[in-house]
Every structure is written in structure tokens, then in C-alpha cells.
Image 1 (tube, one colour):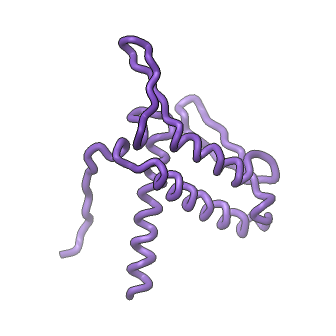
Image 2 (cartoon, helix red, strand yellow; image 1 turned 90 degrees about the vertical axis):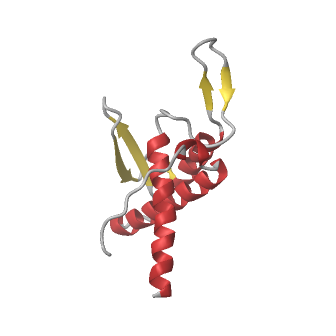
Image 3 (cartoon, helix red, strand yellow; image 1 turned 45 degrees about the vertical axis):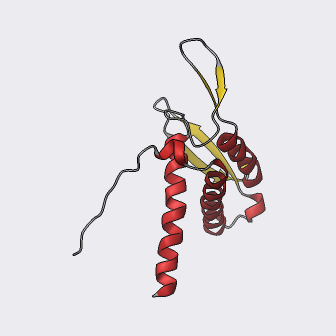
Length: 131
């Protein structure tokens, strides 16, 4: 049977291991930087990205010689993935989330998509190699 398979993961955001999240998203970012470096004919270590957000929180990335380097993004990513805090609305206390991504976090959906992309990409690459 051929067709499209879809599914839903229960509690996906909160069940993603933070260390694995950073690893997979970093792999996806490196892939994008390497591709753009070749396309723009800018050495990888010189390539930087400018990110601009509109009022709907949509992001546009422009790769140039100015902006954030891959290493700077790597450091930011490590912090975003592992230093997750939230505030409880009833009493105003802050808590550190011990695992996963926060539901409703500004970067949560993008990070979850990149995480899934990395896993899917590895799976497809393995299928191609195995024939």
C-alpha cells in the first residue's frame, strides 16, 4: 500500500531530551550554513546570518559577512535548549524546566521541527545507503 502516513506525538515538546535537541538542531544549522556558504561563495568561518522578525514573529534570515557567526549561534542554541525557565502565573515563582521544550515557548516549534528534520534526514540517508 502506498500513501501518506501521518501521526501525532503525545507530549513531544516536553519529552525531547535537551542535550539531544541541541545536538540535532546544531547539525541542521551546520548543514544550512555549509549549503549557504557554497551557494554564496563565502567561506564557512566568514559566513554570518542576520535574523529579522516581523510583527507576527515570522523570521527572515539573510546570510552575509555581518551578523551572527555559526559559533555564536551554537552558543545561543546551547543556552536556549538547556536553560529553560518559566514563570507560574498563580504565584509568580520561576522554575527551571528539567527536560524538553516549554509549551508555547517562542522558539519551541522551530526547534522541534529542526529536531524532527534531523532525525528524518538521518533515517532517509540510511535508507539510501542501504539501498
